[in-house]
Each structure stands twice: as C-alpha cells, then as structure tokens.
Length: 399
Image 1 (spheres, rainbow, N blue to C red):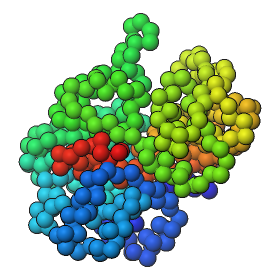
Image 2 (cartoon, helix red, strand yellow):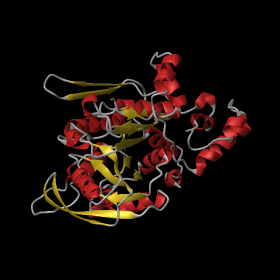
Image 3 (tube, rainbow, N blue to C red):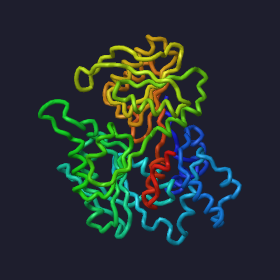
Image 4 (cartoon, rainbow, N blue to C red):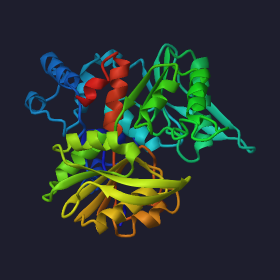
C-alpha cells in the first residue's frame, strides 16, 4: 500500500495541475485519495483576508468570512499586492533535492517556480544557470540538504553564487532539512563541529537569510552570523492527530532525554497530554540501548515525538519498551524522515500503528510502506516565505 501524502490545498493543487497540463477532473480524482491537514496560520492571514474583502478582490465574501485554518486561503496571498505588480519581486527557485515541495510552495503563493538549469558534467561537477532575471528581487532557494548530503549542499552553494552574481536584492535559503545539524558539538576530542562549518559556508557563499525547519538542537542556530528563521513542523502533525479523534487516553513519549523539551511542547498543544520519557544509553553512532521508562503508558495510546528518524533504532526499541509496559498502540511522529537502512524494516515490522512524517525530505517509492503517512509542510513554509518577503512577523504564524 502506497504511503498517504497530504496535499498542500485543493486550490494550490489545481493551480499546479493547470501549469503542468493535468486535467482538473484527473486532479480531483487524485485529491480524494490525499489527506489535507490544516495549517496553523497567524492573525496576519486574517487581516489580509479582511483587506481583500474590503478591496473586492473577486473572492466570495461569505467564503472569506468563514475562513478557518483548515482551508489555507491562497487568495489571501494574492490580495496583498495589486494584480499588475503582484509578486514581481518574489522569486522562488528549487534545487534538485525536493522539487515537488518547492512546486507546492510556489503554487500556494500564486507564483511560478523560477526557471533554473542544473546539470552535472561528466566528471561530476555541478553547473547552475538562472534562466530568468532576478535583478532587484527577493530570491528564495528551496533545497533540503538530505542524501546525497554533499551533492545537495554544494548545489545550494552554487545556486547562491549564481543569484549573487545576477544582482539579486536578497538571497534567502530555505532548508527544510539541514544536513550536518547533528554534529553541533565536540562530544570527543579532535572532532569537527560540522554544523558550524556548514553555517559558515552558507554565509560565505552569499546568503542573506536562512529559513530552517526543526533543527536537531536549538543552539546550532547561533552558529549562523546572518538572520535565521526557525520554523516547526509540529502544527501540521498536531492538526493531523486532532483529525483522527483518537478515543483512548493519550501520552506523549520522548524517545530520549534530549528530546524532552520538544515532547513537552508537543504534549502541551495536544490537550496538555501527560509525558513519558524513554531513558537509553547510546553505545555508538546509530546504535542505542533502551534502559527503562519514566512515566505511565499502560492502557494508553503512545505518541512518540522526535525531530527525525534516521535508522529508527532509538524509536523502534523505545516502542518495544512501551508495548512491554502495556501501551495500547504506538504512533511515531517526526518532521524529517531520513530513513537510512535498516529503518524501513524496523518501522514496517508491525510495532507502530502509524508512522507520521512530513515531506521536508522527498521519499522515493522504495522507502514507502503501509504504516507511513506523509504530511505536506508546503503551506507552513510558504507562509514563512511570505512573511519574510513582506517584512512580517514569522512567530505570528505559530500563535
């Protein structure tokens, strides 16, 4: 069974289909099979909708008045600028790491994805050429630095340099998944702090701002010498869990002590659910051993929360412990589905009721399995881009 994927929104999907030649009827048939979770938006969105209604922007006033976060009102983004100058200085380009996510973002904002040529020479060198003018524009480059990490990171550096040499007014790199974020400190002598190195390289390449989602540790944000907007994938996952209306008692579980702050924040937003912690000792890289459980999960539905799932060793061994302690069912939630081998075998073994992730990393077909649900974070990223472009408050998105 293919993994369920959450669409950005019906309106943005229709727009995207028209641009790629798909028929609306075919799109509607496909959309019925897709989940469309709500996106938590800020008060600024409501103000723009009201402004559009007063300006008579062509939208149905009754529909605008009944706006809820469940419908990511794409028309609101279009009301903010006049038709003749709409988004003329907003340019969005995508690397090769996750082009579908960039297409969803551009469709939600009502702009075309920028034209860019990216190719490899015979010896592996990367060639990038912008195929439209960006002079005086606010450029946003969407590129997660997932596997192959070094290829995608180098591709991003070259994209930044191409935009800088093309006289872009500002260059913002949008990194849904930031590779090397786990190497954020010296755990042993003579180790490199690669997160700081990657941050330095992004700055030196010419980027003016970074938008990153769910960094592995918050202190890594201080490695950047340029402004950083840190966004979270929690709203998308929380809305999806709320739509499931699970009747059993819920308990949010942190798979390790380091994720307690993240799990506590998640539990507070999930009707102030109780918190449990899996205590484990790591024996080496990608190896862990579960020790014991702190908290009560007997007869409850356990929601395990983490920022990423790599080899799934920690979260799978934690889930086994929860089952031993009497958990009724176990759900795994994370923003970044890295899914390095043998993650697929561990996650699809039947111990999880469902594995819920976002599309910050593009998952190929061979990494999909029946329990996997992929939610789209395009609306969340698009709203962040819009607020940055309009000099608005990014934190208002999460209020």
